[in-house]
Structures are given as structure tokens and as C-alpha cells.
Image (cartoon, rainbow, N blue to C red; front, side):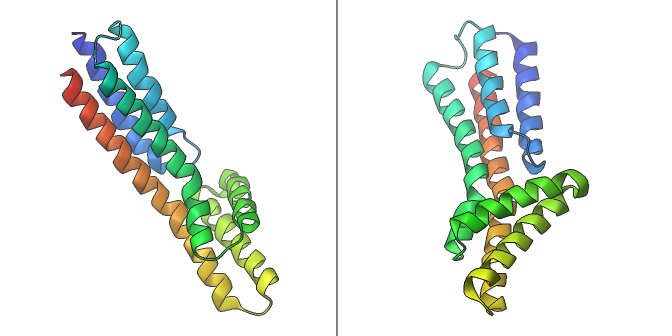
Length: 160
């Protein structure tokens, strides 16, 4: 057992879990690469192939959940796919100068304005659609963090 390597991998998994709350960091992909990298250093002896496969799949699923959660929640709130995609792009553009608040303002504001345009004079409906999209985007960080924390714990149990 390569104990220092296992410690490093567990530390990285904890870092990737914490980075779930940082926009545009592919935490799930990084966690999957960490697990595969550790397995490579042990000659794929640790963790077992079944555990390795499960950890990689959950890590990639966490990454996918982050990508689609805003769109799914926006659609559940009644927003069109086009407005949610436009809002996501606007949020990413505003993320650079304004940080995380730019993501929220860009996504929520764009979905709100698009819903107003689509439905005429229904600000209450537009606000609901924007709120669903923003809550989904913010909740995705928590979902991803919980999933990656599970990966870190399962990995630690498998290799220590």
C-alpha cells in the first residue's frame, strides 16, 4: 500500500469537494482523475475495479449534475430552454468581472427578462421562472459537494 500517495489522493478529493462551490471548476472530473491516478500508481491493485468504476461514475455524475441542474430547475419553473441557456451564458460572462454574484445576476436577470418578453406583462411569472433557475444553479454546488464528499469517504475506506 502506497500510504503517502493515498494521503495525497484523499487530500485532493477533499480539495475538489470544497471547490464544488467555486464556479467553473470541474470538481467532479478532477475527482475522477484523482481516483484513476491513484489506481494507476498502485498498478490498479487499489481500489478494486468495482470500487474504482463506481467512484469514477459518481464523480462524473456529480459533474453532470452541476452542468444540468440550472437548466432542469429553470425548466421545472416554466422557463424556456433558450432563456435558461442564454441566462447561463450571461452568468458566465458576468462571472469574470463580478465573481459569483455575476453568475446569479446574469442567470436570474436574463431568465427574468426573457420570461417578461415571452409572456408580456407577467412579472410575477417571470420572477418565479428566474428564481427557479437561480436556486437550481446554486443548489447544484451543494449536490456536487455531497456527492464528492461521498466519493472521498468511500475512497478513504477502500484504500486505508
